[in-house]
Length: 314
Image (cartoon, rainbow, N blue to C red; front, side):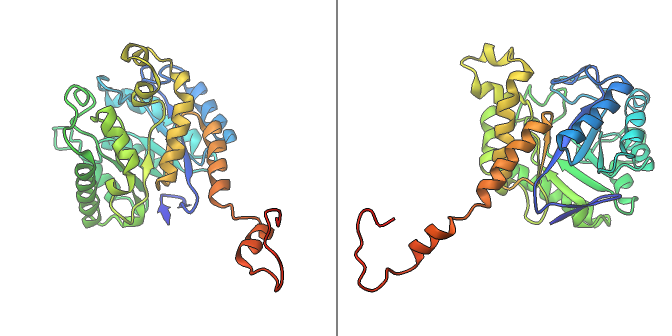
């Protein structure tokens, strides 16, 4: 399987790690650390040294309750970083729901539009839509994510019931609609939207039944990094979980990334690139391991004629 993007056909026969670059003062995990242009650009380079395959650059926090950012502010945050990132030789994704930001990023050479609104957001003024921007580009990749409600209200009234068939139906309909606009399926990646309007139990249901939540034939992107659901299941009380330092979520985040890949995710979006890359190498070594030839031969081959089977034969 490949993910077609503006400049790259990304080979997904092995899982890819998407490094997060938040050019924001208020992201739930690392807000403010890379808000300055120079620090964000340096962070891009650091993530690549750590083993990132893709860079995902965003200028507006989508944490629960986050206030919206003006178009002008978002453009001022992300465009200088994208301009630098496209010179680094890897696919570059822009994390935005605003069509004007998508278009500006693509004009600079960005490869992927990663949209938590799945191209559904409208400015209310009849302006261009995310759908028209993506469909109007000859090659760019796109990631459509499931989100219940919007960032301001999604955790106030999360989804009810079994979320897996609901997420599947949502993603299937949107992917089909986008294909109807002329966007070929190899350009489309799907994200079940961990933490976006789901309860803790629902998020882990999506992890356990990940293959059932995304229609067949599309790459899957999983975004578990430092999410509050990980804190909720690794702390002894809700109060401890709420105050859990984001660095304390590193080990659970890496575990969730490995489990997501084991359950079929093709791309994992993470903050802790180096540790995630190392963990995925361990998973790959296990998955690719076969019994040692000598042992396999003994198990498969009949004993020589006349030989006696004893407890110490091996």
